Length: 262
Ligand SMILES: [Zn+2]
Image (tube, rainbow, N blue to C red; front, side, top):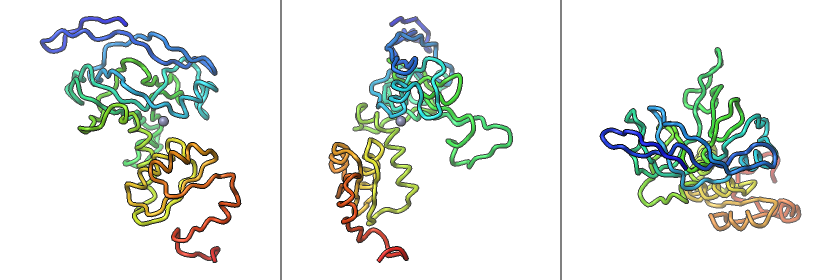
């Protein structure tokens, strides 16, 4: 990759001006390319990416050229579940210092649209909200499966001591699971069902366990996700296709009997 000498304070540091990135061009057309890297804006830090979790949306962009209604109209750098180390802190003084290991919050709340309103504590619902590695809007928002990325300092979350970069790549999907469990309310001592045990479901199991759920039952169509669910805290597993096992399953302890229950 190329580098250029830039002055940072009193020190001249060579920052990269390009780097390898994973770019989806169209369905089935995924390339690793050298992409240019501009100088960070005043509020941006440069991060050397260490690890990136591969989300279902990344796979859809690669395999189908679209993730749901988000259709590739131009090449897109994939990746939004990343960890890395700050190479150059934001010049405006915000955010972590160079050398800080970080996880990344990949969303940028939107500017809104006309008189459309959204709850102040839920900026993810704001019209125009963007996400790293997303073709939901055009121009697309490039992601962070790249050697280096310039990111707004507000996206960066310094890692607590003892959390390694590899594990920290799970921060974003774990936050999704954490949020889901938080929305469910107090699960301590309760019996909980998790339907679907891909990465998000498995992380939901782990978060439920930590939150004190007494009995976690995990359901999936495949055996491997159920193995993982068990490893991270599920007490029981059910194969979704095993209707006899599901019919015979005792949900006792799940909920108070309601009108439809005997
Ligand atoms: Zn994701």
